[in-house]
Length: 407
Image (cartoon, rainbow, N blue to C red; front, side, top):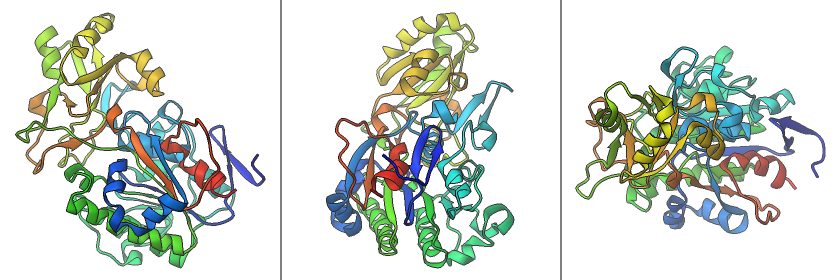
């Protein structure tokens, strides 16, 4: 039983932490990355041995926005409403980015802790997430991408890049994630926030498989910063928004089922509209190709027949109707299509081939979105009581940080 003071966020109770905590979302970090880098990550290796080392399921679809919001709300997309990075807004009929707080259907644990009087700081890699993560939050909240121009009024800090002491890195670089970690350490050293949330980018994971030299260098860098937070007395909980898998043919070309082309060939060019929730402003490293799509049908009464035909296509793992997908994946039914299509571990699903610009792919495609990318690490530098039979989710990170690791 929790002792007071506690806060309640979205039906879950969280102890107001007595000591400082930091929850870290390492974008695209499947467990194999930590295993492969064990020899160059002394802090994480020690934490996994003497603290907490779990494997959890992320929310579906296994994309960035829905999972970051699940982590900071403690709930799946059916509660917080963020069903992807990109969706078809039923109010307008337009396909739009899902980065506006008006799409969020509940508050965050961060905002609740701030209302309780705790100092809270959020640093994210890309600005697309900042407003969602900072919804209702009184505290520091900025992105590495836009850190040169932050203001006290909007972000809780003036000129964050100058405060951190690093130049603003390219969005397409490991440096964007390093800036997030460096900012977290600098904030801890100077202001010592009670609660921090740090969220990185998966640029490296999209290009480099576990155990490769570049991947191990990234995790070595990350481990150094996390070790410094540990020495500063922080309870550190690390998880991920999704994993990552190779989705390429033996010759290195992308392995893709182009749904819009296929459905157009079968039923005519206006029979369906394909929405790819992986879509965001930063598609150079994945070409808007992931393993999850929603399909809006001109004639929804044909959904069962079309689903059966799609599910027979090589590379398609699963096709569900709206109700089935909402129930199985804990999704808001009004923000997904008539069908949800999930690609296999080695296959991406696209719209029309002509609409995907793959000129920026300089390595075989690695991406995410499907069930194969649902398994993620859940690691803490403190031990927790045993929880036999519990299905761990990445959005249990604050339960661990506030409740179980504080016991």
